[in-house]
Image (cartoon, rainbow, N blue to C red; front, side, top):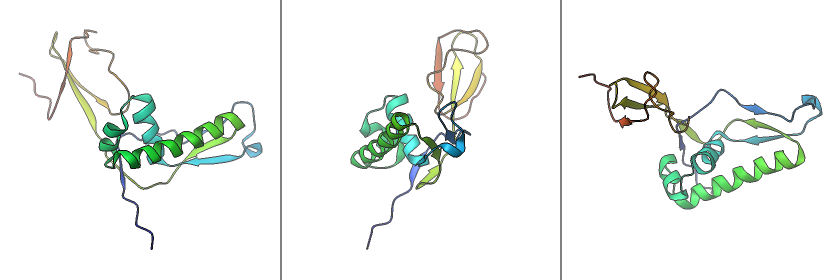
Length: 142
């Protein structure tokens, strides 16, 4: 009997779920499927540059399991890029945790939130200062 798959933690789920080569009608394309947890693995390892150990911790799986997920995801993406296939993102074993990152500007005390998965913040949206700090918990103005 096969062991049931443990749900992975996904912290970023963009609205984009389909990619296709430009200039080729969709009905002429082969399609490959990338699961939502595989896309999360690529985001953590390749976009954010996390180690397999740290990324596995973020997804709630072991380092070895994360390595297998990201290896499978990279193979799917490489196949689509090299052979001109469309990528459909769907399914998988995951729980989405909608969360935001909270920041406060040390220069003007402006507080704001940004969604996870959007990369490093560019600075304070109010005064453009790069002297910012990430805050845990509620944003409280003093």
